[in-house]
Amino acid sequence: METLEHILGIGQEDLNWWQMSIRAVLVFLISLVYVRIANKRIFGQHSAFDIVLGVMYGSIMSRAITGTSPFFPTLAAGLVLVLLHRALAALAYQFKNGPVSSFIKGKPDTLVKDGHFLKDAMRAHSVTENDILEALQLKGGPVDVKQVEVACLERSGNISVVFKKDDQ
Image (cartoon, rainbow, N blue to C red):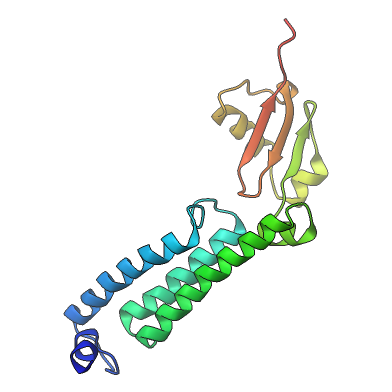
């Protein structure tokens, strides 16, 4: 145990380059295990829920590498965050149509309906007409709002678009 403490610099005020390097490798491998414990979507959705976890997780795990917090308790805190994320995601799934899910994961909002901008919704989310026209262009459809059946600001912050069907 003493050898492990020396290698990891446990209890030392300052870490040298190789202790920090060993910590970096260990934290990387442990983080891979944690992400597997979580689920595949943990860092992929970019909703506020996921971004908050990513920022907090990165901050906590970096402390284990740099030695600004105790090594093992910091790893435990990282695991607690991952498990909390998983538990809240399960709770949001369980109550998918209620306020719990909306609070945890957010909810989409309609920005365009039947070819017309919904100014109140756009203002509430600070989305400009140019933002919507850019989304239309990126979707490869016509860059004309009159050709849009519905455009929504999704929970991830992306704008999804459904174009009107050609009747011809």
